Length: 575
Image (cartoon, rainbow, N blue to C red; front, side, top):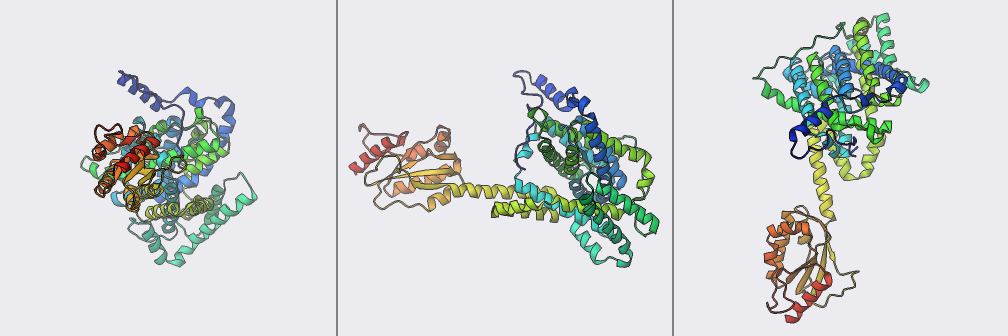
């Protein structure tokens, strides 16, 4: 999952020299405005898009309701988000087949926010987050997600799946809890459950899980989650099982309005807004990349990352204005959309219209759905998010990758998603530095050159990178032969050099010089010259041959190995 997200030419193109305003306006138009080309091919693919949109709408209904309930904002918030954010992201986003709406990952972030700040703060946070994501798109930051390591993303996904599953336990066994910790709430709900009161909900869960597991094996093409929810709702209505239901839903969309923003509360909400914005950007771009891969999109039809960020940010703003929750690209729904034949944005728009029809004409029926049924749907969804093939691949990739994967997943569950990504990236960076440092080594450098250094001359080649993590170990384990009076260091194979590596080399040269060893450098690269100069290496390389000697070289730096060895031999002869 770490491959770059490609999307054809950068939106807006380069800024024309001397015309920054014109370039900015062109970029703004390319990122923010829909195009007629977005619907190219819709005349021939509209039937497939219509079928895909209807299918995704049916699949999305229980998920939207369930994520709304899990977030603490209610089923109506999830449904409104799927309608409003879904259509805005489809029209303004950078992907042609992405489906957006409430997701499990966003629910994980919102639960502690709702517990700490209250449901009313979510609209303000969603508005702020949407503006941040839109700004990121205008600032051309869409490609940055490509640098997230694969084990971090997979560990992140595993952690999200675990939290989604744990969030459903209090819905099945309702027990009062603080709401701050998903793990603590799940444990409390399990240990303090009143089992005589819980068993009807457990029956509903068992029925839903059984249908979702068994039905796809018998009949393909039917959304098992919707069938399971319908069957469980009928079962509850006919048998009178005492289980909580969704309850009344609004029979229409709220009138758009800006949330009330208190300036005094703004500083405390910026942190949560930044977390929501980061998750929205990351998940949406990853989902769009999955969509491109599944659809086999040619370069001209791949996701434009900056435009995708702008569209998703605008969707979050629109959702906040009608009482919804922040939305992101939904990987599972996007996959269903592509696999059922979607070719253009029409499919995602139809998906939102299907859910709008439910809001307008089916609110009474939806209100009777048991909460336990939605919990069961999300439990199965969470389990399916974890692919055993991926886990095996991470394990077989090596201990470093497995450590990154496990730590990211654990921090996701025990702390929060944004911290998990930060910790995962830092750990991946440290392990990558260790791997690069271990690849750096000193090896006898004259072998295979046809040059035979004379007695007293030792040639060593520095391979790899000479930087802060590699230089101390590299030189601490190296010892010259007792008979060496001249050392030729070959630096042409040094790929990367930083000031720390150059400083370690300078210190080592001082030690060799103090021991009476003359040091020559061969093959220093032009792009490393400034760094070596800053570390004072030229001043340390003194030539002991007389100034009038024809072989006198001030800086003791050579381009050719044979010339360096010949010069070293002159030093040995003089000694």
